[in-house]
Amino acid sequence: MHPETLLVSAARPAKEVDAPVNEPVHFTSTFVGWESGATDRRVYGRMSNPSWEGPEHLLAALEGVEDPTATPALLFSSGMGAIAAALHLVPTGARVVAPQHAYNGLTSLLASLRESGRLAVDQVDITDLAAVEAALAGTPAPGTPDAGPAGARGPAAILWLESPTNPMLEVADLRALAEAAHAAGALVVVDNTFATPLVQRPLELGADVVVHSVTKYLAGHSDVVLGAAVTRDPALHARLLEHRTLHGAIAGPMEAFLALRGMRTLALRLERSQATAAELARRAEAARREGALPLAAVRYPGLPDHPQHAIAAEQMHGGFGSVLTLEVAGPEGAGDEEVAAVADAMVTALRLWVPATSLGGVESLVERRRRFAAEPRTVPAGLLRLSCGIEHVEDLWEDLVHGLRAAAAAGAGPR
Image (cartoon, rainbow, N blue to C red; front, side, top):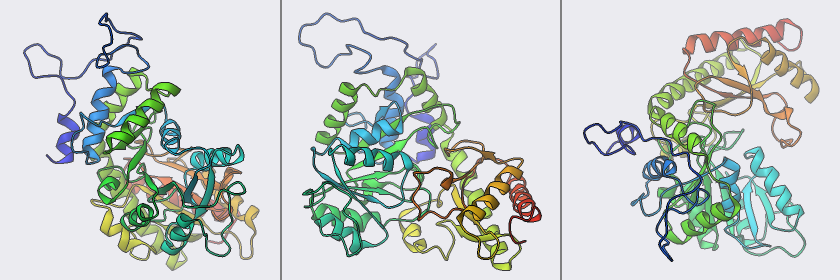
């Protein structure tokens, strides 16, 4: 069955006379039961809820799990809940290899776990296979800092990947990196939030676990905070489930219902937002080359001159995602503060794009990532992350042009 049809038809009540078309929301903290020793029954709301089952089975099917009822996806209270559960798969003192550019929540959690001695961490350029292989083996390439506690070298236990990365939109060769990680004895976890399973299915490329911020494209309306983890491996699934149950990072039934409702329109929303991102990237790059707008760089995996475009074209299907970045240019010789001022002036002048963090909703969002102190200095000060929604592309483009020209006219940057 095509995923577009699966999204609409799966996880519905049985077709019986007088039956509802949609699953109800199950608001309950406990379940009736009296059988001694029963382990296959619902007992308590921290362990299970019928409202989780629809989105969990649907997401597992979308990610290519052969039997979604045996190893369904696992909903968590947030994307960070899913990330924490995946990192908990390895013992204390283990080493994680992660991207140098990644979701800020992940890098903050890794820093906390490193400082507490829970994990060692190496962050590397995941587009450099040799550097990743060296980090996996415990012998980072020259110039790569050992970010773990003393004595924590040795083969890595987890290779954590994003593709495209947040916010630099680097594309990882998931198949090649998964093969390298498995050869080194490491698990492979891929955050598939940016691509979604409609565009990229990491389990089919060798990943052991896939995590999502369901908040973003899957739910799709900026009104839910949820996460999910997906695996085909029954043993890993059992451990992820145990972590969720014991740590209590569970989804509320209403949030699960809203996530499933949002997933019904994922294909339509993604088709529109990806087409918009591709067109805006094309126009912005043309304007940059012509010197018509104050732009230093345009990043989007769908652009032919993106450094990893060929890899993206091979492992992403039906599009290249709905996020692009614009690197705003400042006056000649400007430092980071001046460039940031240009970018901030541009964002302030926008009338349609919403200045907010997050992504994947129906509304288009814009954010200067270096406004966060924790963002790596390798992220340009003037980089704006644009999450395209479902508005008309002409309105979005006109607003971007207006914002860039307003910033230039104010004397903040070149025209």
